[in-house]
Image (cartoon, rainbow, N blue to C red; front, side, top):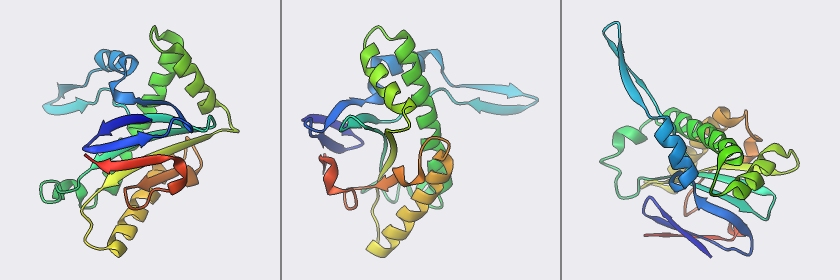
Length: 196
């Protein structure tokens, strides 16, 4: 069992089916890139412009040797009031953020394959899946919120998923881009998730 904690959630991956499961944005190779590409704010013609640094997804894992999962986790559960501004009409902003993290993470994977002194074999296996059209790439936005009703939750998650699919159609089939939470993720992926 690989046990990872992110955003007050514990993800337990069954190692009979999952390999190469890591906290991506905590990995030493990602941290090296993050140090090199820092964000900054510059002033041009009396206007401040913020240039974002690099950002990575939360979890990377390989399921049954053929499926690469890139998972970004947002847990707003029990913080609805303090995050109200983030959550209202936020599908576009959240999808753009996830899309950038996926893009930056793929750049890190390529860099790891070329330059890693820690996990070159890991990045080679992951890059093989990324470049092999017979293998699948899944992008998962794991989104926990305090939903008022099941119907409203389904509608909101559907809207998030459609927006995210639009941002990531350059990478993978739309059916492989999903928005999950503790109530709707599939039973057949050998994963258990608990609140921390």
